[in-house]
Image (cartoon, rainbow, N blue to C red; front, side, top):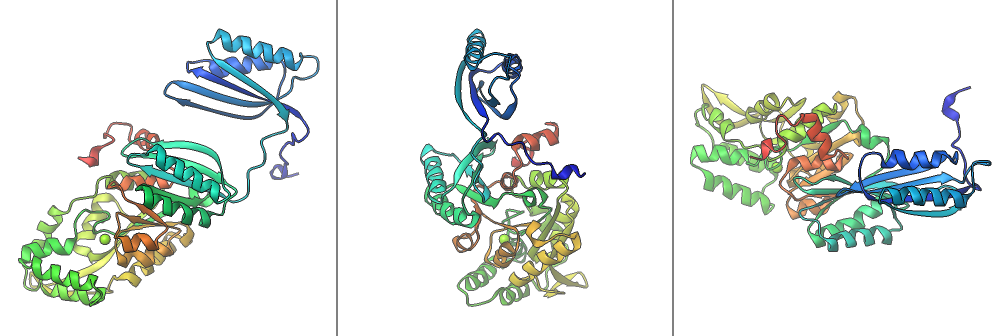
Length: 415
Ligand SMILES: [Mg+2]
């Protein structure tokens, strides 16, 4: 009785015609073609249409003419004469059945080019083929601020595609993201971002150091940490200790100096409109992340807290330390609070202390990250616009702009 068990119609042995129309786009082409075909009472098996620079390509796969309506030859002649009258080109190919079933294993491959060259496009396509994949569809997601193109691929293992395309991406200086197709992609509902050099352009500790006049000392500790002489927690304590005695009013001054990454507002605003929950985790300080949570309307924020006693920084932090393991733990905690499996999370970060979080998330994006981080995460974005992450989620620029009503101005936070 259930309508859910209906089987799709099978055209396996049915004679079918592929009708392709190409030419200058104008209103009425699609209606005109199907009006013409209606005289032959054909059934539509498949249909695809796209418009590129004012030229339309319309492909319809239809059954052969029904008995009593006319012959295939008559259908051909009628369609050709209609196309000619419209100044269009028509091609009709006869055959049997529907499209070949698409291979199992479907993936979305998103390519961000800045610019996208024909050489790199050829390399991407060849690499997809070499993994056994077939490109079923190519779709432009955005022209701005980068050219973003999505390839729908079937017949290849997602993990294999990812590995193979990552090599091409590096070689050609483009960004490629590979995600498995399926409802999960549409259902991703929590995005967690690192703050310093990800959501914002600055490193907050350096802003504090500038006020304390200890930039050099802080930079030295950072360098030692990078060399592996100190772990994150040791380096955090060592750097915060240099801030001891600073007047607490410096917190406000640092907040004022924080610069959001281009595209940050667009990303958060669009994600919120899509119903996503958005959070930040930072090895920096709640004194800054709480302000960001307020300003951007974030759902979650966690960071270390600078201890302030009698109006002065003590040079210590209080509470749970947010380090590399802490960030991954917080991602899990936020996901649990949002009632979501980890597979439905997206994490974005640039540093080594983001690695555990990036690899724990359903999709981990290394954002303008250090080479070491890029090597260990499957998806990298190397253009300086945070909103390009939307394209990896399949959101188009048009959708972003339509949501903004074009009132707030598409490039508002690129200024
Ligand atoms: Mg960072």
